[in-house]
Length: 178
Image (cartoon, rainbow, N blue to C red; front, side, top):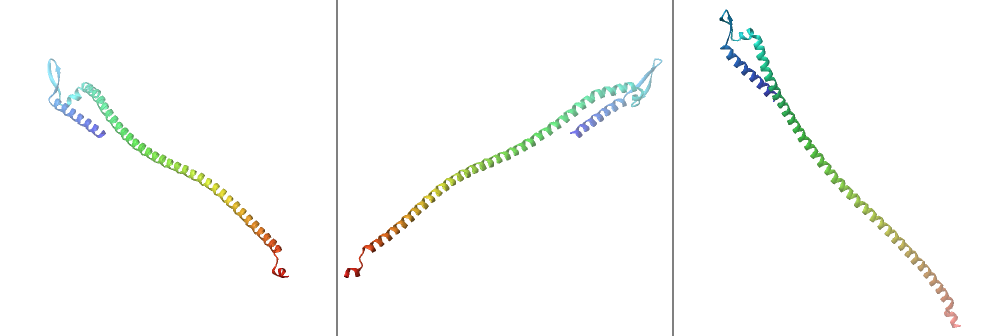
């Protein structure tokens, strides 16, 4: 864009110089001496002969041209800044969208992990309850087994006592014959 602005300034300067050249080639500066006009300069020589007028014309043209070129340059610069700003906003929006997507993915994974952790905690609690029930059940079974063993031992001892008692009470066949 700057190159276009410089090119425009060069073209305008060239066009201005062309117009001035065509105009000066057909002009002459005449000086009145004793009531008669005498040609003092022709073409570009008029600029050096009437330098104060040329300087004034240059200042007037510069006073108009410089602000116009400044405004044009300012518009070009602002347009470029706006373009850069738009590109920056677009890239920022894209990065923000990507960051939001990553953040949402992370939150989803975090929620999934929290859900899994809660399920594991419930499973652990359930397993603890099962362990307590199983421990109680094993203790009950051990008590029943111990009780059954005591009853078996007691029953065996009682049977042994009965057998001995019966042996004492029973008359042997030799004692019967006599």
